[in-house]
Amino acid sequence: MTSLYVSAGAPCRMLSEEPVVSKSKFIGIVSVFSALIAVSTILGIPLPQPLGEFTWSPPIYMALSVLAGPWPAFFATALGSFVGESTNVATRGLPPIYALGIVWARAPEALFIGWARKKDRTTLAVVMGLATVYETIAFLLPDWAFYTYGLFGYGSPQDIGKGFLAALPDILTIFDVVYVPVAFAIIRAASPAFKRFGFR
Image 1: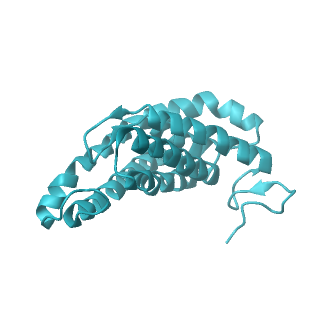
Image 2 (image 1 turned 135 degrees about the vertical axis):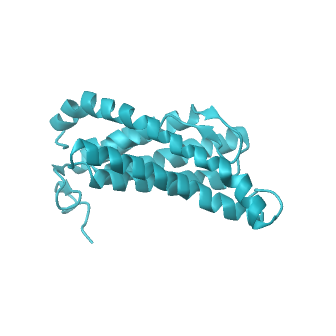
């Protein structure tokens, strides 16, 4: 497996086709954007369970996946989502599993989109859409199981059909696809700054 860093004091190369950036820049990007993703998750619009909330973070991590590459975006998305959703769990009484669920659903999106960052605009937009499909399924299927078997504070066990109906609102996650044009606008605006830092 390719290492993120060539050595402790050398620049890092994220996958073979990624630009060389310093370790400090890598950590800096992850720190800044994980904080931004956390805040945009905390400030989301509350929704009934199992949805939890409508957050503002998808265009941020979509754009970051293109601007900085898959691995900075992956770590920033995982850390920021976990911190943000953990705060929501603590302040709004959501099931604790939500903090892990949002990481499971969103962090891999950064890898999918980051893989397509050098593709043409149409391909990139399609991959962003497919990443949103993954996110929707990644919320829906576990919630279906949790409702069916009464796990992690999802109530009492019930039959498979009722469990599916209880989890079905998760399908609305697909509307995160509306953030794709916003992500492209962020990419266009922020690209010069990221190029100066050695990304893209």
